[in-house]
Image (tube, rainbow, N blue to C red; front, side, top):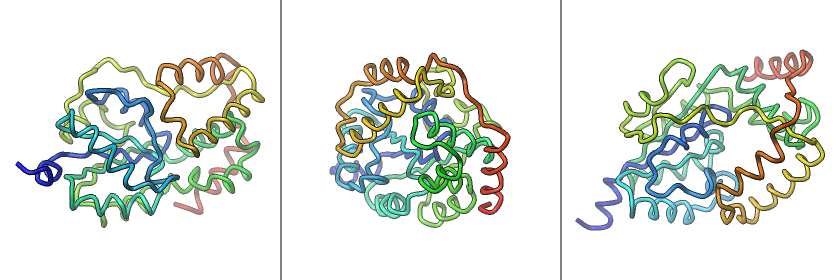
Length: 249
């Protein structure tokens, strides 16, 4: 069998998210031959690095019968969508869109950025990160994915057993005891959270984040972003974001 035929027969599962819809839990459940150092590379969203994405697929395909990419920022990225559509010429592509209650997802996404020190209020957040709201317009984006990609799977994480849902789309789950990941952030210090986020975002831009082992990343994240007081969305913040979402859906 030629390399080209092998590539075309290799199932490539791309979990496009969006963010805050269980993608970290899914990543921890997937049967990687060698677990990647980082869940996300942002190759087709922030970096628009097509060859780097193809290399990542090739590296996994060399050791696995199935390839798994977990990239929740791809859901609202037109570049990611068009590139993945073209990849169907080389691979057996499966796009997986996970979803939950859209209001809950929007509030969670906003609080995620706020607790990392990126924004101070919802109006600033929506302006700087419009996907906080737009990524909850599931049907708008799903329609585009379905028009471009033959195999699109939708999983409502609140309505189904996640392990069973993954099995039904053709993935054999190895670890059946993975707990729900990504508890809400509770930084020990908001200023340290902000400083750490600035440094990490710069590392992502320079692709240095790919050099950090997962264990080191997890340790530092636990030290900085957890252990403090739990902060919730205020009624005013909830009202503003819900109003923004109502004009988007």
